[in-house]
Length: 270
Image (cartoon, rainbow, N blue to C red):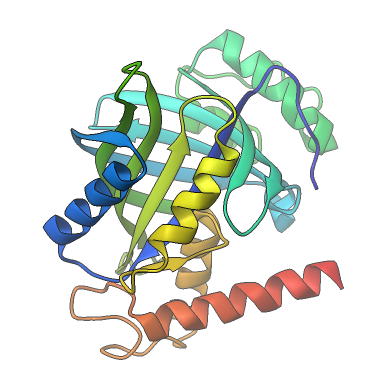
């Protein structure tokens, strides 16, 4: 477990791989599952999310289960996010997250957190720039992954209180190799929007993965994306067998990525 920060917002979410590119079919399956569990399913539109992840030499942030990214939504809203895993099990991730617009005040908060992880970030008060990417470069942070997500959102609303309980995000995720060739995968992300929903998330996951179109997944998008790029650039993913004509990973390709990540995790903990 990495370092834990104060004043972060806690979030509970889970990730499930989707094994069909039939968008309408998947959305209807999600809405049906929400209804079965007693919630009202409402479609909340689609957004385009561009993420750029950063780390320093030797992937120190990643080794401390900490992710730093710049997120742009619909080419307008820009947020900086620092996120860390608190608990990880088969059903969900429990994370702490700090996500804000870029400012000098936020930069001071960010450096305070990063100093705890690495001495490299000490004495960094004079490295701020109005452009967050320039600031990250000044801090010795390098881009480790670029990712684009087309996200269709379905909300699960409590029919009695009208409170939003869960957000279901159907994500078409594309990561880019050094050659700029895309590699894609489809994921269902379920995020709790109210406290005390761990048990409900567990039940959602258990019921959803009974459907052959869904597969339980123990890794976040950054881990999956980095693994996909690594195997692709090592020519260990075969066209038409491990990814289709649209460069979407197949069941076999996802199996290779899972084996790679499992081995990586075993080596870290051995």
